[in-house]
Length: 125
Image (cartoon, rainbow, N blue to C red; front, side, top):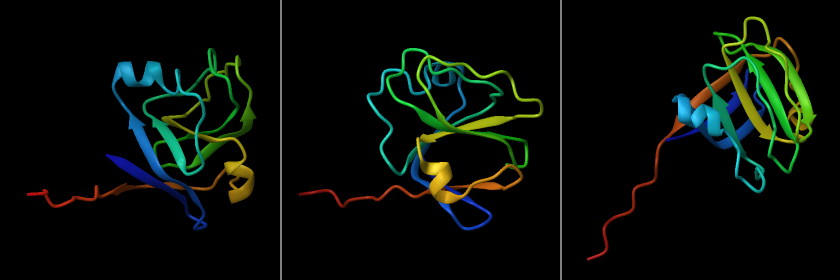
């Protein structure tokens, strides 16, 4: 299932985001990906700190509390970096670098997740 991620200001952060909730998914995160295309994202929950070890591109990062409020926003976190745990963070959203600046996201904004219905194609007979 994929999600659309928006802010309470109406900005669209991602139109095709996935969610990582299982231990293996959370540990893997974006590792092994060549890039994070525009419109894509990853929501990791539970999570209060991340790293970009073994990645080759920068990402924007949002740390969210239980209600989806932005506790910390990091613009263009470079590869081979790690964050300290963010007190009160319940989840993290990883987005393509430049997304937060373009959307004007700030600490205190609220982020919303909406499941996208998968398009069903009729069977070819």
